Image (cartoon, rainbow, N blue to C red; front, side, top):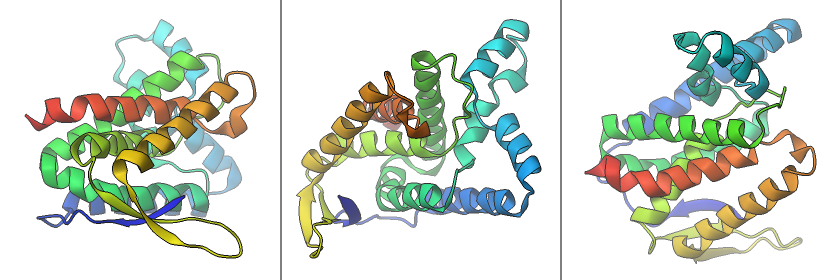
Length: 219
């Protein structure tokens, strides 16, 4: 299923959502122009490597730089499909959450969900030497918030049934729980396999955080 649009109009222009998308594409452009060696250093410095984080936490538990990758990794991506998919979901669902929370609260909420999503990934896979990168955890929080605030919304969704590709209206109350169940399924499989390098538990943790926290941040 590929979402195309929702039927919830925004009452204001989504400035923060647009700026987040622009920031992600700017950082991705910087990734593209780096050499392979420089890019590798950047990913390991600004991405979140669970094993490295725990080692640094034991050495420098009060250093700001120990925790910085929990935020900086939200602006790194592993390829065109990764960033395009993430930014498309943020564009479709982020404007409505920004509209309800307000711009500054939305930015705080977005970063908080991303941090909690990263924490979930570290807890589940603490010894992983693979950098966790991408806005997926934060955007998953946006999806969780959308389910909480707009359960009756309808999402125009492209269904890839080759050779036809119908577009159907799916209620958010169905689309988003199905998306979450897919993350749970893949996350459970990743506990016993390599998981294709995808931080499924960051998706799960971010979605749960967004669903629970959005009303607290909103008040």
